Length: 328
Image (cartoon, rainbow, N blue to C red; front, side, top):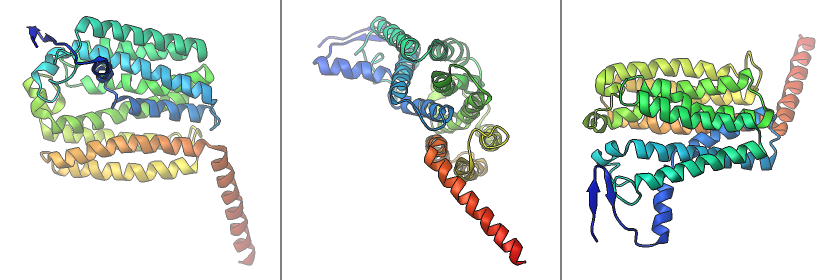
């Protein structure tokens, strides 16, 4: 089988149709998408007071998946030179020659069009426009302007990963409230500790392709200090959904307090051992679990049965306190 290398595009034939499907599927970086969708789902549950329309949920999740897949595919096209240079990404569809850039571009455009149409027809125009703004921001601002030029690439670029929370809220209500924007802000502030922990793990790879990630330019000590700072900002922010906004209740408050305390502990451990990649790996893995469980807490807290339970407990606690007061 012959191969022809043109820049970072390598022409290579697939063995069968199933391999073609698999290659295009890999272009979308499917492991990243579920984390984006869970913030969308949590936002929808909160916006609907725990009573989400199943069809609307399905449509919004599908539209979000298509938009994210389009953005990731475009990213694979743009970063094909970096992917080709790095050992861990060299086997992706474009640098390995299984998919040509032109075909990937057509695929990305189709995905974006399907996402916009689906959300516009079955949800509303605002959610569709927000989903497309996520694609544009991820490619135009993060990938093109920031990623290769500034250590603040992840900080500003984190807005792209936070937009799904707005999409979910807009899909349910057709508007954006303070609670929606706070969810956006939580994901936005969570992003730097999450990605910088990863960057500490693969610092050499980024240095090899001259991507100015914070650990590469400023070093491990500065990076861990920044992770610690963002963590201390993020954890109290999550409680603002309970007070003053009142968008979530005591169950979520307990969830986020417990999860946040563990996040702070792990960030502190990393601050004490800036060069320990195992500690960085531990924080990176926990950051993913943290966001998933935080969103789960939002969903559980929003359910009518949870409201009934907390009201029941609160009523009986009040009765108990009153009884003690009388006895005294």
